[in-house]
Image (cartoon, rainbow, N blue to C red; front, side, top):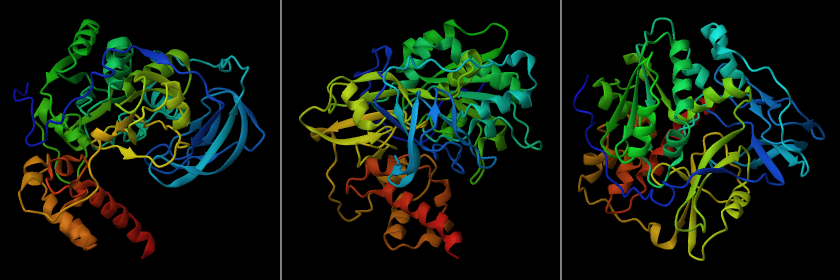
Length: 441
């Protein structure tokens, strides 16, 4: 076993998890309307298969996959399709979405459906069931899970890593999942090991979650080679490359993926969702979301139907406090600030953080003083100062040559910058410009 259990660089932001770490998960009441974007995952958006006026029940398909790296979208509530059109998306754009008027008097019971017995299925059949259920990574990236579970035949995977670090400040979604649903985490892990033909797994959990460590260890299956490891509390410990380095001592080369070093990494919530698919037969239509911050009256961990609008979620938590200033989907390090209260929660929404005035940063920036803090904090050893200067000049090609693709937008550089230069936002802008370049050529 690799003994260092750490990675170099990174930062130690305040954890701020005490607002919800001890609050049990509860279910939120259904709103009057849900809005389900057809793009809720990395890859191509789903194609709509319903039309206005159609009646749908929980779990019915609204969109089908449009390619291999794509997943279906399902109705999270029973009701009537009001329309299909552009709607505010959490990434700041407007994207096609299906609007459903929720039936106020429906018991929200799904249609009777066949629950697949995964023990009698071959690995490709299990992966296809996961694909049809629309399961994606629930740690934030929303990468289709079926793609991760079918690596190329020339790539040998020997280890599954389950990411229970949840290193983002404020968020306690994964923490509460491990405390309240540890058996589901283990069942999902068992199913993934079966799909990949792997006999070894590790579960990494930061040491600031002792109750989660205890729950996962207490329910460890005796017939599997699974190791639970407590990890140093440091951001971004939950990033795939950092987790692999800390637990296995393997370095993922520049431009490569974890599978190139024999590893598949999955989030604990994704593992629990896979188990739920094979326990209930229901697709991914709801998820656990942390609503927290000093700007919301009643912070909570909630089971939320996918597509619930931000305003309805905040109302369910008592509304805003008088000094609420900013709303972030995800954590404050990597999350996206929101401009519309009608923006819906999607599959990848881990949390909603409402920041009060004292918790927000000033928007003014100052010239770079070449202090080097960003270099010392970058976990993938880039030169954020140089990349930032190139971004300000829109010299995208030079940024690409300076390994911009290795940047995971973790936010460490912006967090440590005394000049308050928005380095992560500049890098996100550069990545978007480089993605558009081939289409414009």
